Amino acid sequence: MLRAAAGALCLALFFVAGCAHSPLSRTQAEQAVPFWHGRLALRFDNPEKPSFFANFELTGHDQVGELNLFGPLGNTVASLRWTPQGAVLISNGESRQFESLDALATEATGAAIPITALFQWLHGQNTVVAGWQADLSQLAQGRLQARRAQPEPAAELRIILEP
Image 1 (spheres, rainbow, N blue to C red):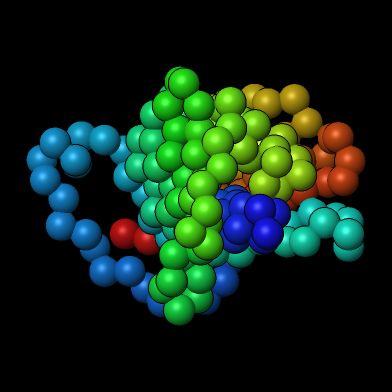
Image 2 (cartoon, rainbow, N blue to C red):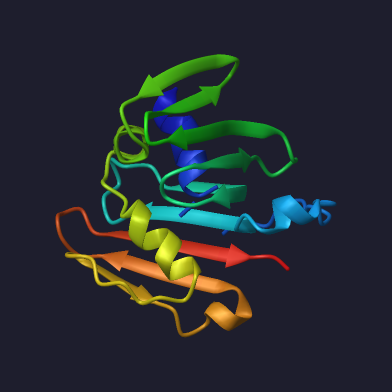
């Protein structure tokens, strides 16, 4: 169940046609906090590892933030919240605690996702991560793609940002 919710998270991270979310009305203070929404997909080059697809809303940064994943009909599949003290995954009315966002992502997807680099990539910084190659060439058009060659299995993360 956790892998399914996390999978949806991961992409509902890391592209599925889904319901578009209307822009949220955000206060001036909220606008100072980074916010992204769109669709994400995480695919593994291994048929035993399921691919994940989801709509998402992401706010914050690698130290403090929240990621909400939505199914194609707009229903909340999972909600992740994290601080330096730990991370929480809420799915199907259940809550699970993790020591960090990295631990939560690894447990949920079965693979280490470079969370800190992901936030830097979203800000247009081409941060180098061992085993990963990010393609930021279409970030201005709202598209980010990152591919992991090592360790096996290879993985691909795609994110489509909506205005």
